[in-house]
Image 1 (cartoon, rainbow, N blue to C red):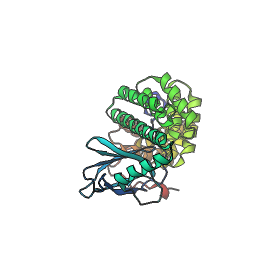
Image 2 (cartoon, rainbow, N blue to C red):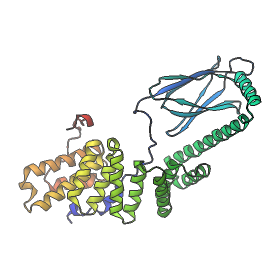
Image 3 (spheres, helix red, strand yellow):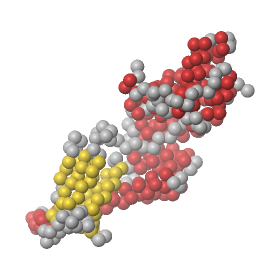
Image 4 (cartoon, rainbow, N blue to C red):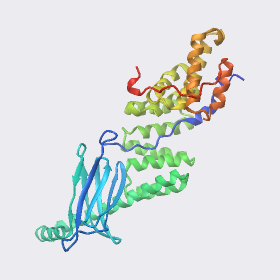
Amino acid sequence: MDRSRNLSALTLVLLAVLLAAPVSAQVGETGAIIGAVYNEQGLPLAGASVVLRSVNPPIRREVQTDQEGRFSALGLRPSQYHLLLLHEGVILWSFPVTLPPGQDRLRVDIDLKRLREETQSRARLDPNLERWLAEEREHTERVYRLSGHYNRAMRLLADNQAEQAVEEYRSALELEPNNGTVLGLLGSALAEVGRDAEARAALERALELQSAEPAHHNNLALLLARAGNPEEALAHFRRAAQLDPERGASYHFNQGALLLNLGRTEEALSPLQQAARLEPTLAVAHFFLAVGMLRQAEARSSRPLLERPTERAEIINVFHRYLQLAPDGPYAGQAQEYLERLGSAPPPMLLPPVPLPEDLP
């Protein structure tokens, strides 16, 4: 059988992308929140826990105060955090803090005596303050619980327990029914356990709330492709790549893989080339690209490839790249068979230098 025509199994390699929460700063930009905690007597409070939580992006950092009441939380992404102060299992105070982009260090000192005195003073002057404080405490507790469900779900997914992760995401949605991030993650988890109708509903609702989130488009496209709606799937793959061109290798690859499986080889080559260019170490993109190049070469001329050395060498090089990146990968056996057909030996084990994306033409 001509293996270049037999790609029906390759659809299974489409890449699911868990929601990457929007970031407010460039990758690598981090700061710190530092400070000190003083108790009701104005003395340093040692052994207290300072918990910083952010849902978007999902971050949880817990640090302890030292003997002088000082704490420091390093390596934090710019975001709005909820700070929770606990001591011996009791919540002493909570409030929002914002670490803005470009600020290396934010100092937050917590003087419990002063805070309580100020709160009591304002309460006497403003009858609405107690209501506002109660609402703020309720909001902080809801965010704390939401982050707990989110983090447990991510751990469950990492342990291949998708059904349990689904329940955690549903519990999170009871707290915030219109949280697009959680809806998108719920859709991905439902798809993983084969509950496609529920998954599609969750992802479509997520897109209503976050229409510019590329991961929602990608993961809905995966469902549509699985359900036999290729044109809709391709539209969502393209939209995902448009929304996130710098990190769109997976989206371009999914588009190209689907086109290749549909027999639309000429259309498939461009997104596969894009995927390999954007992420030179994405091994599977090189394999699919090599298969697409082989298909196109065979369709273009009936002359054996052995008589077309330039085309043959280009295709061999791409198969070699796959095997060098993934010598034990899922397509290693097929790649070696293709190379035998092309009259080529397996590649050397030493991988040639991979150019960085900015070095590529």
